[in-house]
Image (cartoon, rainbow, N blue to C red; front, side, top):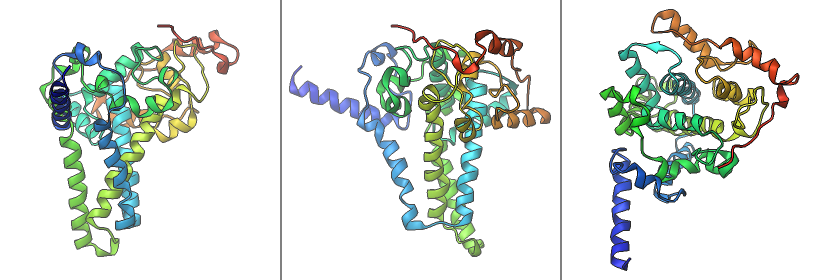
Amino acid sequence: MTATNQKTRTRNRLTSTIRQWFDADYGNGDLTAIRARPDRVELLRVLPFVILHLGCLGVFLCGWSWTSVGLAVAMYLIRMFAITGFYHRYFSHRTFSTSRGAQFCFALLGACAVQRGPLWWSYQHRHHHKHSDDPEDAHSPIVRGFWWSHIGWITSARNFPTDYSQVRDLAKYPELVFLNRFDTVVPILFASSLFTLGHFLGQWYPSLGVSSWQFLVWGFFISTTLLFHATSSINSLAHLLGNRRYATEDNSRNSLLLALITLGEGWHNNHHCHMNTARQGFYWWEIDISYYGLKVLSWTGLIWNLKPVPRAAYENTHRISGNPNLAPFHPRRP
């Protein structure tokens, strides 16, 4: 390849990457060719994460107030529930039923978490369950190490496209496809709304001591950064730390700490053994806040048919081992 052709190819790839920040489906026609690319960290895809983390430093310029800190906590909890309850348990695993209108609202709320679109999230998660901790798993800490599973895999071009053929049940809804394709629209509107809200509250209620920049930094940058790392800890730490009740074919583990910071996702070994139940904490002492929230929503009639924990989940616990922490893990080979 000549130097001129190499420069042209590099320029085209740069242009494509930038356009994909606004149109996630741009240039993703040939999935086979994309998957043939080297699986590596790409600096241009790291840039949005760098900006997100640098935005947290704005706290040294705008300061803080109890109102802004409270906003950050509220936005963390609401959006974590949107990821765990809707992106994960509904879109990825269909563990309950709802109306089309509510489905769209759930997708909008999940998109505010800045973890891309609902179809991409669901496709990647379903792929993870199919290949968990084997060489095809996009974010296995067993195969590629902690940092790759935590953040590196997201920056690889191989993992950027959505394979719509694997989420046909969701791709039949054009409104969901739109949110998935233009996955930066909702986060931009969300951040802008926080900025605007902070401005008016600062004007109308000066005693709160808030400002537009304070709301943007705390409500968006700090809250979103913490949300991202907490969610990513399930990809990374939940396959390295904790106990194993079930002898699954992967190294998924249960962790109370991870369950608390992710509203219930830390019961990861439970989930990998019985992924199609709305509840991931199978026993009363396994705190699963997302499930409690879904249960409350079911009382309103907004959602229904929450899939229960199968009886086999309790029978298997005792059949595997007298000590539920001794379930063996045998990595699958390529």
